[in-house]
Length: 219
Image 1 (cartoon, rainbow, N blue to C red):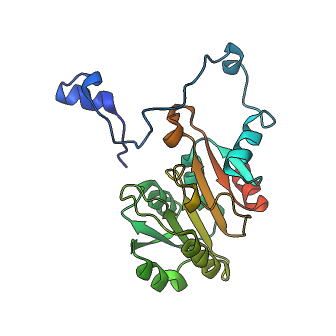
Image 2: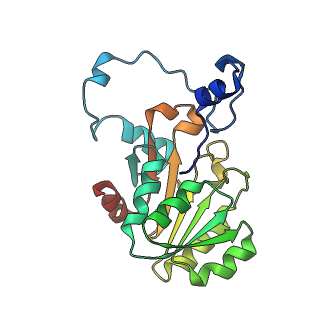
């Protein structure tokens, strides 16, 4: 079982320290979140619809029209491994452990790589998928877009994927790949919960070519 951040009530009970006395840095969720207005009652009485105002807002913010809303980027992390045959998957370590856990659970061969450019480039010929968290969680390591795109080109020549998890990149848009024209084999994951402090709504986005998004949506 993977252990995640949060679970503040559990910690408060274990150590006998009341909730208001904790400074919780375990989730990376902005404590100064977007000020949520009163939610109309009808929002709780209707199923989600694909043709509301969410997608235009997301397309404008991420500056890309080829985008799919998911139930938190975690939903994409869990589903993407199901969309490939058995693959050799490179994961940088340490990093958000759900990526490696879900690809391993789906039967893929995991290759753990040091978070160094030289280590990644030496391994590219032996990978079908490379997963990069940018900036990395928990180290904060940041990768330049040009380097990531170079890795993508190398992988794509053999039908490979580069998956870039940008859950924490909102304050550094110049490092993001979200606004670039979509490329086959490039998947960018974005999260509302971290930067906007809205983790409870379970909303994230995947940006990729339309054919892959259609498969992800179906799954």
